[in-house]
Length: 377
Image (tube, rainbow, N blue to C red; front, side, top):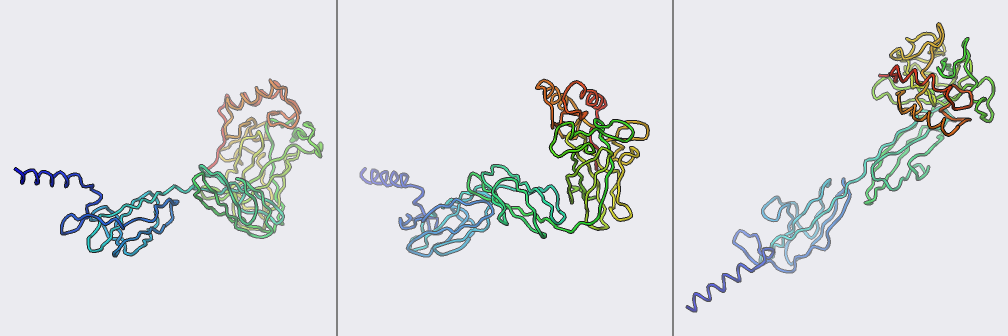
């Protein structure tokens, strides 16, 4: 009877033994020595490596599993491979009694993905360009060369320069992106002729909008400022050059370009005008230094122009939201401006007379009913 009681007691003790103290040796289960201890666990950012450390009385070996698994290394420290997800590593003390493996977790926080866009990829000597960084969960930005710490910067490099932005997320991890801005001397005068539907009066003349809106420095020959872009002819059609210049009442806007045999898509943008692309790529040169959108509908991609009088074609007006569509969203913006009795230098003044009123509805209602939207490759 005493023998049965002794056997039962031994079985109970064996069952009560913690599993973490059982070694995984080939000769059976042995208790783990208490002197195998990790010095620390780790938290890192994705794309990084880390060094794990432990101490013990014998040779330490490192594994990717609590039992069996792959041998990763040996010694008191172990350098992981590049990690992109959280992972647990296991260390074993190979003294006179093989220990159970001890876990050392590595927590991997995701690094933010950050990207730079620019108003143009190249500028003329003396010009400027705006760089904007975007990314999720970014708490701070840092630009190099020393150019600022916000999400957007405007720079005027004197020579071709590569800019770098580092974005830091709330978990302390960082992402980096780079953008090179080419700087080139510009000597080719290039003219673009276009009319804007809402501002057009008659006989090839537009309203002097800036003067009507009491903009300081404006004259009776100025209509409005426009942005003229020269874009790559291959998707995603990056902006190579971008210029903001004055469009005059006779429909002429002029920019300076570098002498080049390169072809570009020509794009015109105005604060309430519909973004309009040239039908085909253009090759600015001394022999071809003008592009005339006004001569026929076929000068725009998708024939996307409106005839304002016989033989005169114009860019559609009314895209107040600047989303490349003229729709009910734009009407809502116009109605809000009318309700607020807005006047002066505002984009909702579609006819350019200096006031926002019912007279501005005529153009936008026509274009909404005709489902007008921007056309481009």
